[in-house]
Length: 212
Image (cartoon, rainbow, N blue to C red; front, side):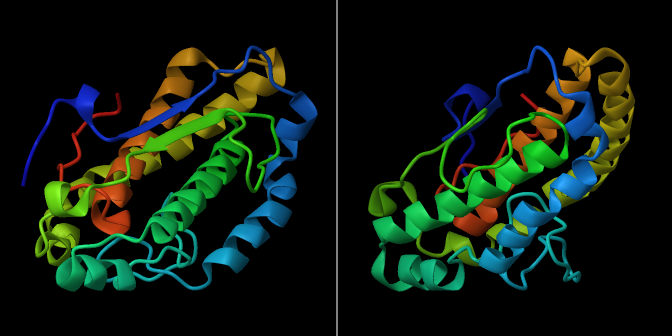
């Protein structure tokens, strides 16, 4: 289980901090999100939430049933390959889901695009399978990531509280307090690293326990 400095981790997520946000779209965000959330669910279908022994629809950031997981696992195990178009599809799903969550969590006023990067910047390195991935490790990554699941439960609960506070702040000031913004982005970043490690299977480097 290799570890590396956080700065060299092959998964990054940054979201542009908006100077001002729209009070009206913020007030009705839970309604405005429904059409694009429906699109995400249609692309995804039923999926594993990422938490052991629980199966829910859309409860864990960045995890979608549309991600090509089992075929990728088998391809790495038996062929030591990660087909590029499978990688592009998986990353595309992850990026779209991130834009939807960023809009839902009030981090941006930009309605989520199905293809444009917008204010959410994600980079996931394409792996050299024979050099960067161990053939048998995908079988146990879900287990090795259990400590992260436990941490993320608490972090996501905290993020929900933060978003509620930010909702009121935006309605009164049109601003998302920078500290609260950074916390929510940090939770998304942490979740993305875990999903990339355990579900997308693009890296064997164990995710850091960090919001940075």
